[in-house]
Amino acid sequence: MPTMPGLARDPGAFRNLGTCNLKLACGSFRTRRFAGACRAQGTTDLAALSPSEAVVADPALSEPSTSAPTPTVRSKNWPRKSSLYILRTDGKSCSRELVTGTGKLHFAYPSTQQHLLVWRHRPKSVMVIMKLGDELLQPFLEVIDFLGREHNLRVVVEPHVYETHIRGRPGFPYAYTFTASEKERLAEYVDFVVCIGGDGVILHSSNLFNHSMPPIIAFNMGSMGFLTNHDFSNFKGDLMDVIYGGTKLDSCTLLSLDSVNSLDEPGNSLGVMVTLRMRLVCEIWRKGGAKPEQAVEVLNEMVIDRGSSAFLTNIECYEKGRFIARVQADGIMLATPTGSTAYSVAAGGSMVHPNVPAILLTPVCPHSLSFRPIILPDYAELELRIPDNARCTAWVCFDGRSRQELGRGDSVKVRMSENPVPTINRADLTGDWFDSLERCFRWSDRTVQKPLEAAAVEGRSPLEGSRG
Image (cartoon, rainbow, N blue to C red):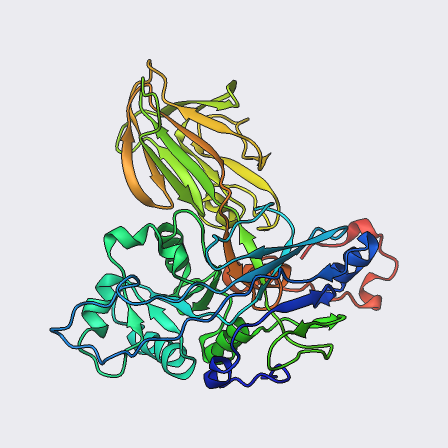
C-alpha cells in the first residue's frame, strides 16, 4: 500500500503533526475527465480556507468493566469531526466545497455528478455496524481492533452490540456506544461508517442516520451484497485507503501542506471516490391533518399494498397536485435508482444506474395491460392518496420497515431527499455497478452460440439459419 510522502501510516506520526492547512490544485482522479473539466472552466485553485482546526488529544481511557458506566459519544471529550473537501464534476465543470468538523455532509446536487471526498485532517471517529447475530462477531472484532488499537480511532458501536459483545471484554478501551437521545446527532460524532454484512446492513445504517449521512464503506459478508462491493479479505488495505486516501490524483499541481511535512510531489493518493445514493423523503399525512404525522427517508423504496384484503388497492397518484393515475393493483412502489435492483426489478421495473437522477414508479401486479412501470425525473413531487370511496384501507412500509395502515383519506407525499447516502467505491461507480449486476444477477448471461462452419452454410441463405 503506497504511503503519502512525509506521512507514515503510524498513528503516532499524525499526533505529532499538529494543525494541517491543506491546499489543493485540481487534477484528474482515475478518470481524467475531472481534470479536463477543470481546465476547460479555468478552475485550478482549490486553496483551503485559512481557519485551522486543532486535533483534540484523546483523554486517558481505562479498560471497560461490567460495573463501569457505559462510555458514550458524549461521556468523554469527543474530538471534533475531521474537515473534508467535496470535489465534484459533471464532466464539463468542476467545483469544490469545504465541510468543517462542525458541519454536516451535504451535497448541492445529491443525485448527480461524480464526487471525491478528501480529508482535510485525518478521521478521528468511526462507526462499525454488523448484521444481526453472532455469525460475523469475529470479523467485527477484528475491524474495531484494527481501527481502534492500530490507528487510534474512536469506534462507535450500537448499544445492543456493546452490551452483548464489548462490555467486560478486555482490550477494547476505544469502543463507545450511544444513547437514544444521542442517536439523532450521530452524524455530528462519526467521520465514516463501516458496514459488515449484506445490503440489509446498509439499509439499517441509512435508518440510523435519517438525515445527514457520513460516507459508508461496506464489506460483503451477506447473502447477495449488491451494494457491498468490498471484499473482506482486503479490509485492512481498504480501510487504510479511507483513512489516508486511496484515489490517485494523476496530474495535479499538488498541494502544499503548511505544517511539519510537505506534500509537494504529484501522483499521491488522496481521498476516496463515492457514489451518491439518492434517498426519498416520505411523509405520512392523515386525513384532515395540518402537518405530516411522520417523515421517513428511504434508500430503496416506499411500498403501498393491499395487505390481507381480498380487494385491489385503489390509490390516486398526483404529481405536484395534478392527478396522473389511479392504481388498481396489489400495490405500488416509488423506488430510487439504488432500489431499482431490489423489489422494483422483481415487480418488472427497470434497473437504473445510481447516478441517474430519477424516481421509479412501479405498480405491483396491476389489473391493467397498459399500466407499465415509468421513470420520473428526480425533481418530481408525488402524492399517493387512498380515496374516501376505496373498498379497503392500505398498508405502507419504508425499506421493508415501519409497516403501518393507511386509512381512507390518508396519503403519502414523496420527494427527493437532500441527504443522499455516500458509499465508498471499490473501483469506480460504473464499474462497481456492472460488477454487481454480473455477480448477483448474472446479467446478460447466456451460453455462447457456437460458430457455424463454412461448409455447413455454403449455398444457404442467411435467413435459413437457426437461432440455436
